[in-house]
Amino acid sequence: MRKRRQIELFSISFLDLLSGALGAVIILYVAIPKTKPVEIVPRDALAQEKLQNDLTEAKKEIQDLQRKLIDVETKVAVQISSVSAKKTPPTSKSVDLDVGFKFKGQNIVFLIDTSLSMLEEDRMGQVKAGIKMLLTSLPPHFKIEIVQFPFRQRQPFKSMWGNVRETTAFNKMDAFQFIYSLVPNGGTPTREALLFVLKNYEGVSDIVLLTDGAPTFHNSNKKDDIYDILRVARESNTHDVQINCIGVGSDFINDKSSERYQFLSLLAEQTGGFFVGF
Image (tube, rainbow, N blue to C red; front, side):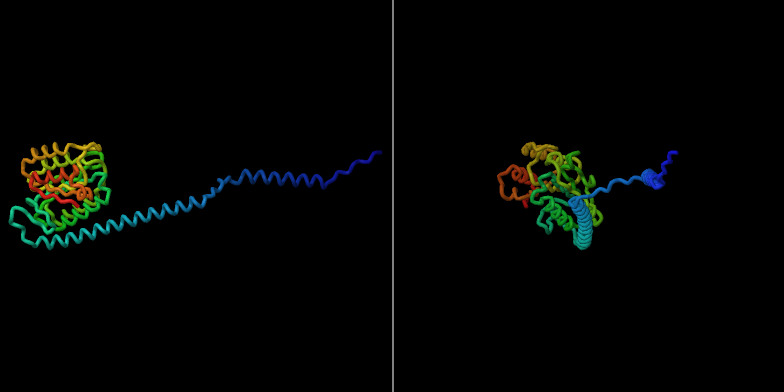
C-alpha cells in the first residue's frame, strides 16, 4: 500500500500569519485618517514674513507717535491762544501780526495748494508747520477758514467748514486736524479754488494763497492762462478782498522770471496784498 504524504503544519501556520498581518495592515490603512503632507517653508519666506510683521508694527508705532505729536501741538496752541486772548484787539484798519504779515482785516481764508508737486523738498510739511504757527499766533477775535485744492481727483477743492469761524481753542484743534490730513495729489486748479472763495465767502477780508506752481486745469498738467486768471479774479473780487500770496519752494527764490513767480506777484499786487517766497 502507498504511504500518505505528511502535511507540513509549519507551512500552513506561516501562511496564516502572513494573511493576518496583511489584513491588519489593510484595516489600519482604512481606519487611520489620512494627513496632509507637511509643507516645509523655506527660510527666506520665514525671514520675509518676520520682516513684514516688523514693518507693520513699526508703522503702528509711527502712527501712535504722530497722534501724540498732534496732541502736544494742540495743547501748546491752546495755551498760547489763552495768552493771546488777553491782549487788546488792534484798532487800526490793517492788522500787523508778530509773524510779519500785514492783513487787511480779521476774516481770513487760507487757500492751500495740495498738488502732487508739493511732495518735493517736503513743501507740504513746510506749509503745515507754517500754517500751524500762524494759526497759533492769531487771537480769538480773528475768523479763519481753510480750503485745499485739489481734493484728490473728485473735485478741484474742499473747504474745512464752509464759512469763517473764530479762532477759539476748539476751532484751532479742528484746523490742526484738517491740516494734518492734507495729502498731495493731482494738479494745481488755482482758478477754480480762488473763484470759489471770492464768490462764496461773504465778509472775507483776506485770502492767503499758498502754492508751489503755476496754475493748471483740474486733473491735468496743462497750464492755465495766468493773465486770464488775473483778469477773472479782478472782475470777481467785488468786495475788495486782499489776496496775499506765499510761494513755496526754491523755484520762487531762484527764478523770479518764471511764470509761477509772475502770477503770484501780480495777483498780490493788484489787490494790495503781500507776496513772499520760502
